[in-house]
Image (cartoon, rainbow, N blue to C red; front, side, top):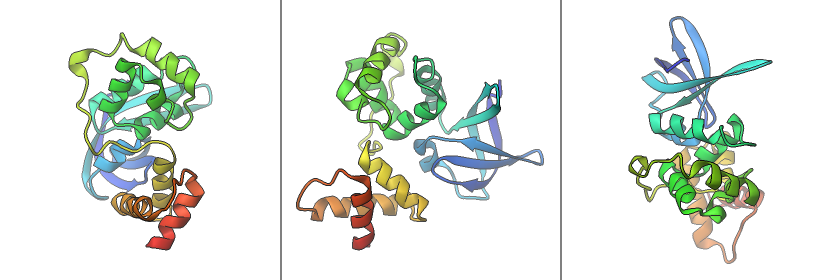
Length: 196
């Protein structure tokens, strides 16, 4: 197992980082929570990693915190959750919020994560509740990542070149000035761009 990767951060996007180490550039897939914690491009970086070996690919996953990697490993042991959905879950909720939702059996909160329906959320609770130790639960912060359409809209704005903080501020402005509830990603992005 590749325990960690340390080197120079060459490139970063909300879904992956390229790290130069030993004359090699490694592409590492990351959750949005790790993207937020990455240093500036050109800085030294240390990621806890996991190599997933498939018949047709070798994929490296990286995490700024060891607790993120452990949660990712637990999530991908749940029947029906692969690495892609595991990253989505870590991007949709903070570690603490995810752990608390599982411990409390909060199916509604878990199913608010893109790609996770009610049955999958119930399976997560059943399969992971006993694996999460109460002493290891991270405190939920007020800056927990939003889930659902808001998170997807932030990702879309970041992909368009906006910084994460700016995208969040744009969407907050939309929420304050909107007369009704906007739950469509396309409408959120369009309104955010028109308020810029």
